[in-house]
Length: 559
Ligand code: GLC
Image (cartoon, rainbow, N blue to C red; front, top):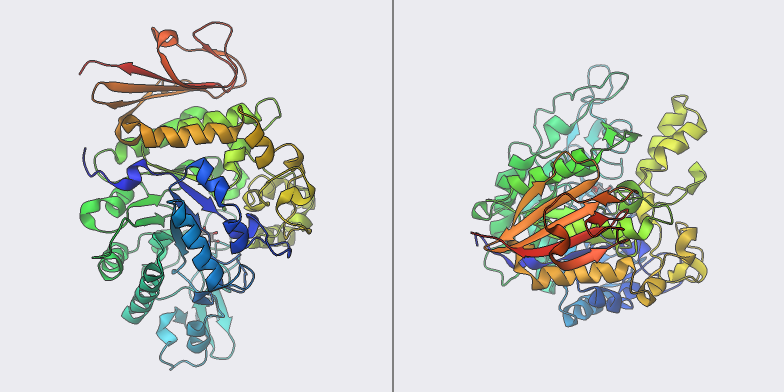
């Protein structure tokens, strides 16, 4: 087997601490809340937990704006609570991966406070300061991912600083070796404390084109897209190789490094995750979650199954020989998959959530389950712009309203796409606030928690939760799932998602009916093959899959 590694058999689970479990009754999830729910993770069988940021932060972007990398935000608890959580996870043999947000800091981080003090201080070039353009405006036309210009003028020193995200998230200058060494030292500090790796936030944006050229402007837009000059800049691989040497070399493992890398293609991913190059174990690519909109996430367009499955198959093929895929349907930035790629109407919600889980977990790569996905949690029915808490949504809505768009139209465009869909609190039970908290939470619980919740799923052997357990166990037990080669079948079929995984003479055939009608499966002898998993309604005939049904079969094939 080429490049076999422990994480080829592993499944990770992402926790968004703010929305997972509130132990102290302030309406916000916290570390002790997570510790109180370790059984849920252990029973699910996951190998790794990735925690979204818990560091000290003004919470402008819910913790992705860090003011102290080596302390816990009081809203989440203390370092002692953290150590207790880490020990608890390790007792269950679950690794803990931290979120590493080092493309930018908070504007309240002491590094930036010092940097903005005057033009000549020692930390000035830790960030991207530039004089105004000749007309006094920003140094270039880049748009911030959270609306408006990516530059803010600092009145006191008369220069602009760059922030590809909010104005409270100034970008660090990785060109400066002192910045890099400070980041590496912080990473070593966490590893010394016992953590098992990092999920690296927008890590392909740390190297930028230092000449900061304007980005392309789409028709009708005011700002330019920084992407061509900020994604995978000239030194990104050099920086990651240096990080590997300075932070990870010689450490007892196993450790996990996974990079969040928007805008990359398969060839980039191969470079990042080729073990021989010593950069990252794997990356989160964005192609499959960018298919249902057009340039802007707020402009949705219909997505056909053929496009989606071909996209994932291309990644399977592209990283078959070198590199490794991460597999995900959702995270804290994406709408809920059952509402987006499945069918969240009551009659299809459970089956489509199980079908999507089956498809993803039977691909080759390391699957990431985002909290609540294992319950088939859905998008929220947002009723008003006042319901949103996410800075990206709020800024976009304000900009659209200011441009004259009608309120209803703005609500209709943000509701299905907003990151808040993923951030509504975890639905633990049917009680008040879904068992998440004893008080009104920071973001409302989805009213469907009365039906969709962990307690109900636990009690129902046909639930999404029980199915996810089986999928995770299958990866652990069956080498074909972890290592088998991948082949997409029925490429042009608009309803059936079918593929094989093959290892030696062992083959798994996965077929899912991604439609709300029964479908005949056109494979000879398929009905008689040994069943590994079968979910959803049985068809009337043996070779028919009911709506959103999925079946995995095993067969022996000639060499
Ligand atoms: C990543 C995070 C997202 C955050 C952004 C800025 O995309 O996943 O939540 O807003 O980076 O840190």
